[in-house]
Length: 147
Image (cartoon, rainbow, N blue to C red; front, side):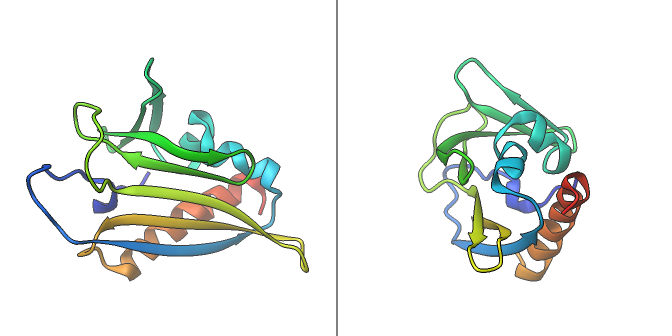
């Protein structure tokens, strides 16, 4: 899986400006079908991370390129959305954490589903590069679900 500075952690003492990047991708599959791919370890491993492990405290370890990235689910709604907030190396919450939020939205007129991605990270990330990274991962997801 691709790795990007989006997922990297910075020391707590360093203050960097952050920005929320938002992307939307059409996917021809239902929310019920897509939800496990955005909310479960097995589903996330299919397209988003190399490995996903949940510990006894329900912290997620999202592994990219053999590097651990700890996160917790900050909010979720079945078949609709999940938000992962990143933790420090000791799995402790940090002030103003990076996060990734996946939302499944349906256009009622066309019956089309969209995967909306909010990626809150360091402002110095290039939007075009982030879009290409997300597009690549979502294309992998589309190939899996046939959408």
